[in-house]
Image (tube, rainbow, N blue to C red; front, side, top):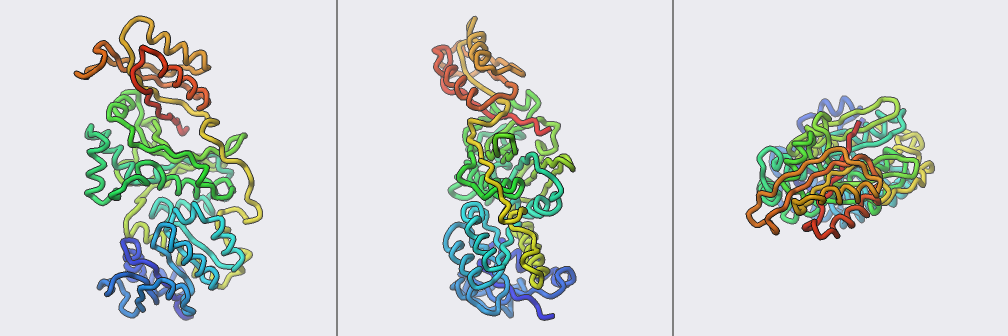
Length: 440
């Protein structure tokens, strides 16, 4: 059987990794796919292809539409990232009857519903394993390996940059800004790190995971996003003292009212495996009703780890080229006409525990006033710490830092309580609030 011809859009880190893996493991891949796979046409801004990628016989173009309109190409691999021209290229490839593989999480999270509908109409596949958690096959695990389960919830460390920053803050007592600058120097964070540290990147990935887990349309716009730029090193220290690590989590949970879909810093008990995933590594914890908790861990970025998922998608499509389109694995796990309209809940509706840190006058009655406000809001206290202020610039000098852990409460009630606490004349500045999840 003749080899499957692939068109590659982009020859950056992941594109080069994809070519490398296809060349190095060509024989093994052909044995698994049932036929050879070759990169026949490459769109790149490079005037010459790098040596050692096995692309000496590939055609080169600077115009990616040359690739998507090439009648010899069966699978288009989109590795440009971002919105445009990626969306136009993918839609054109689908219109031409070509299958698509993409690592573009923003494209899928924002435009996936439209893209998948077009692919369904044309009878082609769009594969996107590499769009979430790099080399971890979490899409396949949710869509196929756990298909017997009703997924109760999932929680993921799905941005390596944020995880690296929080790990360094915990292990070396460093400030956020200091570690961010190192992450940029190491290439973990972009010059503009907003997508990483403010939760946008993780939000794209969570929207995809939530859709596959619960059988709902992609709804990135309803995902609650909160970053880690406000996390202070004292919060990391106090959390540790209380038996927790802080992680930047994406959490999706099915409740009787709807779907929670949120990204934010989270205190996790140190005894949980996911609390000990450090550095730039990723992990996703999935809880199914039949299997219980399963942890999926590995490299969430990088050339070859991400290429591992890209090539796996190419192999899957190659296997499916001769299969009946009506019997392929659905893009979002559930049949396209069976997606549900269960709502994604606003963050004010969620139920979670909280870590609170505030600065207040160190005098009789202050703690009682604060705890009274919490009690009036039906908020129970799980743990309490009080630390004398050691800041030379503390205003006034006789202040203390108060740290509270609450039991599970409605977020709306907590918002009301925090507003009342911040209005007290004995409280200085804003209350720092971090959500707490037991993940049990």
